[in-house]
Length: 312
Ligand code: A2R
Image (cartoon, rainbow, N blue to C red; front, side, top):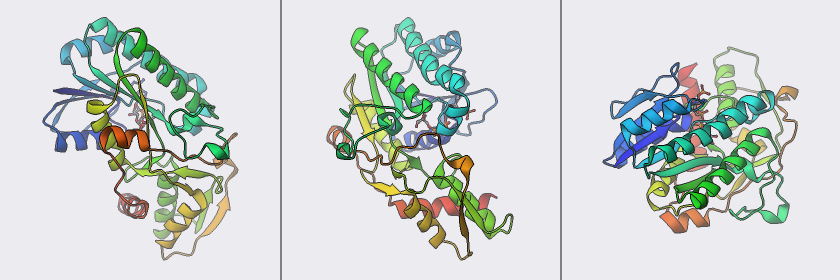
């Protein structure tokens, strides 16, 4: 079997590559943007910009993959408010380019499109935990583009009999994540304070939001299973099944530090629209693959903080 990861230089790509190379006897290929680097002796690395369809087609003809994991994205909600045009281009047009190139190639790979729990958006309190049938009401530009990707995947699966599965991944965290995301941001700030690099003040956004956090190493295991066992045209939630208040998460991080730290609200970290509770129902993926998350949240937080302590 040959597996191709599109967008493999990002946070999840590195973990997925590591997991696949350690778990399956597959020939691995990974794409990155020209300016990025991927260090993995177990995979062939290719430059690819998904905004250029001809490049995708050439790569598909060269690699002829059986499995394709589509991770390439503008993946930040915050950036999506500032650059909606770029987010639409990469997340929607880029995905269409990939699917059309696959059709043009005549290949019949299994394809996993990575979406987001953010797609559910403005859910009602009686809709949690959120099943895959819950109405999506995206609350930000990033979420809207991922909801659109999901619809396009579902339409292409039916219309062109393509073997496409979609996931909605809820917040995934771990060492090496960029500090655009909340856990990495808080851990980096605490590590900076401990090293005396800044004043003992942690700057935070909306602490009352509740989100569903899963260790990225658990998330990529689900991706590996779904590409083999997932049902074409179906969407699967990937999450922990338990929402945690950001305030509690912050407290867990602060409890791991000996420094005395003051918490201050930073208006720049408040989003124009925030969704109060996002919590996944993960019954469908568990039934299909037997997957369930295994790494405790506290362990992930501890390792993420240690990562920043060692990398500042
Ligand atoms: O934005 P960059 O320079 O970090 O590059 C990202 C890359 N990417 C692209 N690849 C090919 N063609 C493009 N036009 C393009 N634009 C961006 O996709 C990055 O290396 C990768 C996505 O990785 P991250 O941003 O680190 O996302 P992460 O956390 O690995 O999430 C993977 C997937 C995404 O679809 C998320 O929206 C979803 O899971 O949650």
